[in-house]
Amino acid sequence: MLDLKEAYYWMTLIRSFEHRAKSLYRQGQLQGALHLSVGQEAVPVGVCSVLRDDDCVLSTHRSHGHYLAKTHDVEGAIAEMLGRATGCSKGCGGSMHLFNRAKGFLGSNGIVGGGIPIALGAAFAHFYQGTDGIGCTFFGDGAANQGTLHETLNLAALKKLPFLAVCENNGIAATTPTPVSTSDMERTKLAVAYGIPAERVDGNCVEEVAAAAERATAHIRQGKGPYLLDVRTYRVEPHCGIIMDNRDPEVARMWTEEKDALKGLRERHPEILTSEVTSRIEAEVAERLESAVAAALAAPEPELNHFRKTFGV
Amino acid sequence: MMKHISYLNAVTEALDEEMARDERIFLVGEDLDIDGGVWAETKGLVEKYGRRRVLGTPISESAFTGLAAGAAISGLRPVVEYMYPDFIHVAMDQVASQIAKARLMFGGQAPMPVVLRMCASGVGTREAAQHSELLEAWFAHLPGFQVVFPVTAADGKGLMKSALRADGPVVFFESRNVLYKKQDVPEGEYVVPIGKAEVIREGKDLTLVTYGYGRYKALDAASLMEGEIDAEVIDLRTLKPMDMETVMASVQKTGRLLVAQEAAPCCSIGSEVIRRVVEEGFGALKKAPRLVASKDVAIPFSANLEDYVVMQPADIVNAAAEMMN
Ligand SMILES: Cc1ncc(C[n+]2csc(CCOP(=O)(O)OP(=O)(O)O)c2C)c(N)n1
Image 1: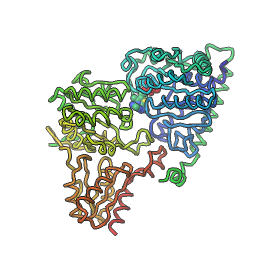
Image 2: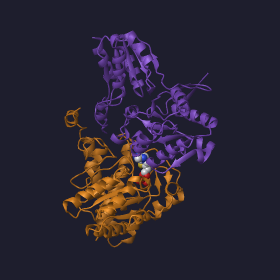
Image 3: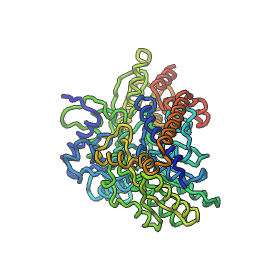
Image 4: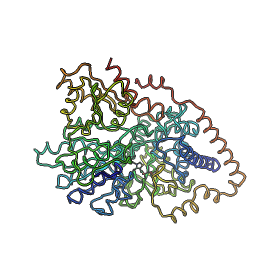
């Protein structure tokens, strides 16, 4: 069963993390590309609530939420995004290349569709070693149009590999609305074509995401092969830093006000998520985040000699 | 008469003029029909030419590159755009085994007038390993392509016009560091032929060959050295075919060859320049030629690491000083 307070904590943390990253970016302290997942927090938190440390996640360019939900490593994530030696990829990767092997996070990815078959490889490694772990990939609706997804689904189904495909269907890819890029919006049909069970899920309802992920992982761990979730959500921020899009303000208002994942969770469980509980969680999150940011800012940049030795340059 | 416009405006002008002249030319790539693409690299063209000739696509590099190949064999002249050069890897079969080879495989009967536009090539912007690739040597190595890398607004316009009129596939690299840089571009029809380098600074002590954004770093280095070393700076502009006449004429004069590039050194454009000069003009050399390049490693994120890995003007100055000793 999903621990609602825990879910609320991590969803709040991811949202605050993204807002903090944005302000660091605006101040010029955080450089490079920055893809924020504000509004989509229920997806990684719901899915990762049923994953174990030995289950492996492959992620996308928009990966902070996935990383935080899977690893709980706030400190390593922010330090990486600030290019510090203490970052989870030692300052070599930045926002688009987070990594944490011990916690089963096998990489964010700068190439759309690039992580999908790698998750199949992680699934295969579990199969090969006879463990009941899972390889899970998050990918956007835009990435669903890459050949890698189609090839991977077929191969996963063919070999009955323990593979979970989570389409984070946020209605837009960079500046392209999904209906403009996709001939059939129903992404579950992709799975049907390969004989893979699939569900469409309300991605702004963490309980529904967790329940669907529970059904999916139960199926997969029984050795029955892959599963696909088409999770509907909404990306609140622009694609990346400065790239703007022309989305309907009324639709944006509906998602940010009426369908907001945190607000919905509070309203559905007023007896558990009382205002005292949520205020306490928010204060804990703020404190943890601020100390992670402070530690990262105080941390040294990657040591040049170490870099030279490691990579032979 | 000159006008002062950005690199991208100049290239867009070339596209516009040639699309008006030649009905067979069309553009294809992600988001091209939405506000002129993410870099505003085709601004105004969808409004003027419509969605038949400015074809926005899903994130499906392999499919839209193949579409361009098939359209080209069928008589059209596609310009295929990749948001970043790194993304062309997804389409590499269509690029390397299909577009590059079709003409030869089918005995010269399959035309392939495709322009592959690598919109935001470059390093130095903290975009890390998968958004910082400099791939020009890959395409120069593959038989079948002409490769150009203009980095001024005028060269952008002039070389795009030549690329759009070329018979075979042209890989058109564009530096992300100059996309919005405003420079003088001649009014009216302006064409820069493929295969012509430019001497951008005259000098007598040493020939400094460069290309891409290296042009600006080489010019910086040349002014840092001014008074001590008088460097002649050459921007290749076209990497294949390489303008050896211009390079050799300069080496004959200076007797020293230094090549500066932002790409990694192994099997690179710079190595090729040196090979050609050694083979074709060894007698003119007073010193062993040298290549200053970025380090042989992918681009790391952190600023101090990226600056260490990427070739900097100071590296050029140091190498030049050593060569003058
Ligand atoms: C192969 C490749 N093509 C294009 C891009 C540029 N790009 C980065 S993110 C993105 C949109 C991705 O959309 P989607 O998969 O729906 O994920 P979202 O951004 O919505 O989370 C694009 C086009 C890329 N990084 N890799």
